[in-house]
Amino acid sequence: MNTAKLRARNEIPDEYKWNIQAMYPDEGKVESDISECLRIAGVLSDMQGKAAASPESLLRALDLYSDASRLIENAFVYAHMKHDEDNSDAKYTAMYGKTVSALTSFNAMTSFLDPEIISAGEKKITEFISAEPGLEKYSFMLETLMLRSEHMLTPDQEFVLASLGESLRAPDEIFTMLNDVDFDFGNIKDATGRLTPLTHGTFSRFLESDSREVRKTAYDALYSKYREFNNTISAVYNSSVKTDVTVASLRGYSSSLEAALSPENIPASVYDNLVKAVHKYLPAMHKYVGIRKRVLGVDELKMYDIYKPLIKPDDRKYTFEEAVDICCEALAPLGKEYVSVLRNGLLNEKWVDIYENKGKTSGAYSFGSYDSMPYILMNFSGELRDVFTLIHESGHSMHAYYTRKTQPYIYGSHSIFTAEVASTVNETLLIHCLMDNAETDHMKAYIINFYLEEFKSTLFRQTMFAEFEKMAHEHAESGESLTAEYLNGIYNDLNTSYFGEYMSADDMIQYEWSRIPHFYSAFYVYQYATGFSAANAIANLILSGGEKERSDYLKFLTTGASDYPIELLRIAGVDMDTEEPVLNALSAFSELVDTLDELLKG
Image (cartoon, rainbow, N blue to C red; front, side, top):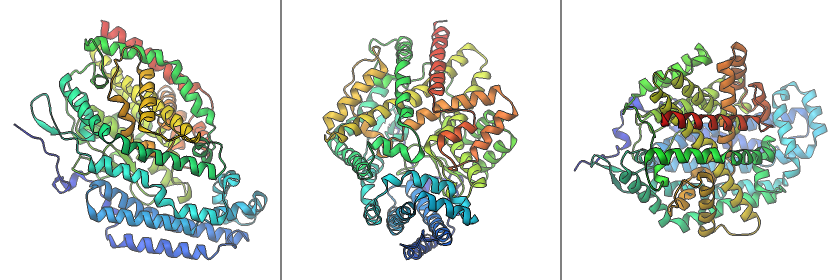
């Protein structure tokens, strides 16, 4: 019997690995950057009580903070990505741990700065900005800091909280080690009889198998592991949520949701309106599930049936180079410069770590420091979904490229709220490109089905996750413990509500919440859904408009964190303060469901 073996890291040719060495050709400089960061932080620490005494001292304090932060960011990002290459590599596990400890020390040593600036008062800080031209670049940062004034603790309290940073992040680290290193899901026999390791990377491929037995076997095997550790993971997640609730309470927020949204000036109504809007269109989602049941011809539709493509015209596999070509063709509406920079980064500068290996972090992401390339980690297997993953992460990377090229270090990052827009605009442009080039109704149905799956996984599923998070945090805020029974129960009820009457009951789906790593970054996932909605609106503006719409979008890509997310999106022509973008996206989903229904009946 044939057995497919997951390759070790050293068995992957270098040409398919990211050029992360460009960050630190001499790894010894990681240590020196950490040391220099902490030295500068010490100089800044000596300014405690004097940092906001004058315009000159405030400028010096902010410059010192920026310089030290930039150094530790480089060290942390490098160690993080080397750790992600193979989570079992002890050398980089130790390096990553050291950078996390250094980051915690840096945060503790500089924790006095924000309270000290806030205590100076908005009037004095405004006067300082007028008196010292060098402070002008920090003006928006200082404005956002003043928004937090009523939630800032005393300098001593901030020091204690910052010193506990590594401990407060422990639930995320524990879950990551369980999920990506310790869990062994065994091997699954595919439709050809070949044994293949069941991993996070192969799980989705098994669920797309034509063989229902393969789908069920993989599904049961994976969720059996999470059922086995259900109480442990529940305790870890309970600790994570309790941390969110405690910190929010210490800072005087009315809820952990307010604490998560407040720093970016996002009203809670944006979160609540998303959930309400999606609930209005659950009947369209249920109809789509019903179409799936009809097309698959099953008496009972199970959760392991929901990922199998309804239409599969061929078994084409794509090389990475072909995937790059497809992405570049789809992104042509963004202009020659955008496409040229992206192609060069993906193929020549080696932004991407392409293939899966044993111990490698699952999934995909775009990451990097202000001074590095905008790297991409993925687990490419040659399927169309990998082309979508590549174009999605490329959106993040190009967003970083334009921002870092334009903004100073302090504004060189992105809110997740805006970052997910850049990635999903790319995906939406790819969908439209593929639909426009569809030569037959059969191919058109295939692309529509693929697009609807994007809606299901991003707009509906992430909103369901957002509801779960809100319910879990509210339960903890009421003084209750998040037991396995409670978490399993609310997740199962939400899943039933979202998938509707055509989906049969399932004993395993209640454990799905326990495999979602994003839950350890509270109130993160809703931004996938809002970003998807905004991106659909922007993509439609680009495709139906002209040079102005493209220029507006490219300008948006350069803005980084230089303003509040909702204000930045207005530059690209979208107002997320209203329900309109979400409702328009959901309306498009409903129309596509009707179109697919007619095509498949035909």
